[in-house]
Amino acid sequence: MPVANYYKLLQVDPEAELDVIRAAFEVLVARLDPERDRTGVHDVRLRELRRAFETLADPGRRRVYDIERSATYGMVMPGELIGIPIEEPEPVAVAAGAEPPSARGRSATGEAADVDGHGGSSVLNFGRFAGLSLREIAATDTEYLRWLSRHSSGIRYRMEIEALLRNLGEQL
Image (spheres, rainbow, N blue to C red):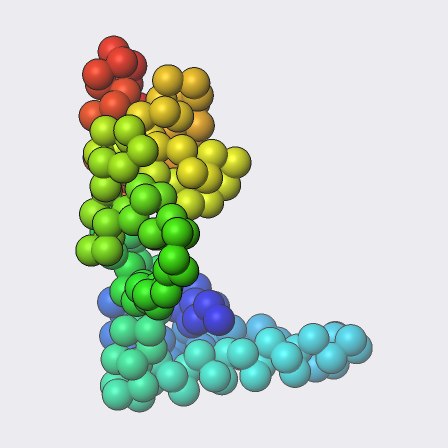
């Protein structure tokens, strides 16, 4: 759940001192007139302002709030890990005569496998091109590869996609 922006609510800078925050709170509360507002919105607004002021006025709570807020709105660049653990799939028992999982383009260590003539190119296991290597997709649909390199599900393939497009004389 996103963290409310208490600084914006109180109309102060995130680096504002306590005196400035208190003054802004008092001015905004003074503007709320229950006599004029018959809808009860002033009660909701007053609760929001109080919650924001109580959080920002206490140094410990403000520090925790700032940490939560920065984690929620922090930028993530392409290729960066964002702290979400990726679970490895459970090993699958292969029946006699069945095709092992590595034959689908990945070795047991998760590396791209040169199986079925994919030439070491990663094989997608999702989407409309599931089962095809990036090299095979590059031969038919470069626009999809450009999209995939920007999409969250394809970020891990970005460098390989860039190399494939470079070899084709195209740019990302």
